[in-house]
Length: 217
Image 1 (tube, helix red, strand yellow):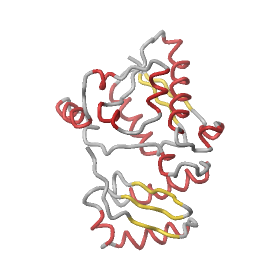
Image 2 (cartoon, one colour; image 1 turned 45 degrees about the horizontal axis):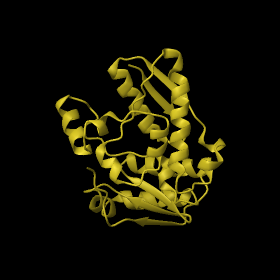
Image 3 (tube, one colour; image 1 turned 60 degrees about the vertical axis):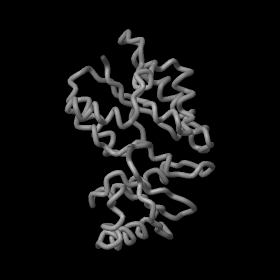
Image 4 (cartoon, one colour; image 1 turned 30 degrees about the vertical axis):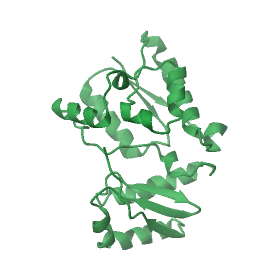
């Protein structure tokens, strides 16, 4: 087995660090690859199927990377629930013949969490994660500066313990989404004012908070 991690600016730094820690704990050989999404026009222009173009390049990079190791099967962590959502990246996974063992086993996200907990994995209750490009509406150009700004805003919230938070940028305004149970704490604590000041210092004209908390399966 070979653990392959593709690093890019679209992945939050804390998620990359966590992935590297998990790989280290596994004790298996690893391969770290770097990818620059900003050289891909199909990614930067942010069309509705942006995820397809990202996945196509990432898994093509993985394919090339594992070739010297004589590994022929590449595995992806898609689960059964993911098939019910709009995920253009699935097309790239199928085109490149990447295996989806969790789907083949009929495992939903909740089943994966249950089995992970039984196996003693530290990741069993981690909030769902997605790349930083998902915080930007389709059609809005993705730039290194905008991605960095979103990462800084989410890191600000994470330092106060708002795990699983999202900061979506829409027309210069920040839309904050918090995990279930965090909304009341945020609006009634000094964290709210601190966040307004921090965002304003980074040129954000308005801060909105979603009243519908994020749920995790």
